[in-house]
Image 1 (cartoon, rainbow, N blue to C red):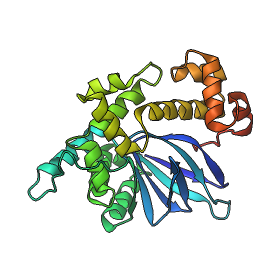
Image 2: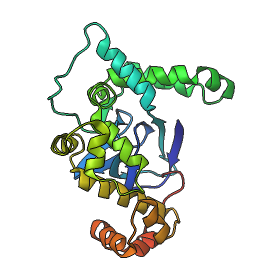
Image 3: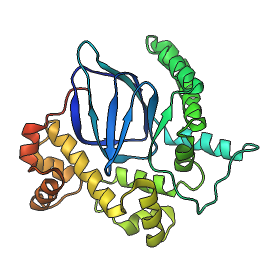
Length: 271
């Protein structure tokens, strides 16, 4: 869990959202995924069920009215345990294996269950001893509130039975520096190439090839904005040819990697 604060607006820039919940206490944030804009504030929280390449920004913020929020990472093991437990519970909704997959990014209302669970978790922040002893239990309570809330459909499908796309994305995220192919991803989750392609696009709005490229270039753009040199940033995400990297980078962002570094410094605390 991380608390964050921003006092200046930030235009949308490449980012990689890991599986997480982002709750805004004051102000607002926005994320753009394949042309779809998700704006969220103290009325709605963001649930990202899979690692996703997005553009993220802060539309308004000032020293007088700062953005205040909390970022909570979703532990795949615990979320899977809870999701499968809910699926096995009496009366739980079971989804046909052929039903469309919810997308990896979802917005959800701050219902009472989520609000109370988040408050109980935040109450531990000032006491390291309480956090050590009670933190795992209160995180589990928050995860359960997410699974029961408006984002529960997407979260249960990502972490429960039939979570092949989430597992394929997790595999990709751990091997960005390698030449991962669609066949590699399909074999990891026991799917044919054609089925993976169809379900992948349902869940992410992108083809696997588009997704891999976006993940790599977004991660590289973040590293360059944070001060990493261009060659190292390219190698970090699996590019062997620096000229190919520069060409694809400019095609996506409209600037060369070096121009990007000069005009897009990454604000402290907003990585």
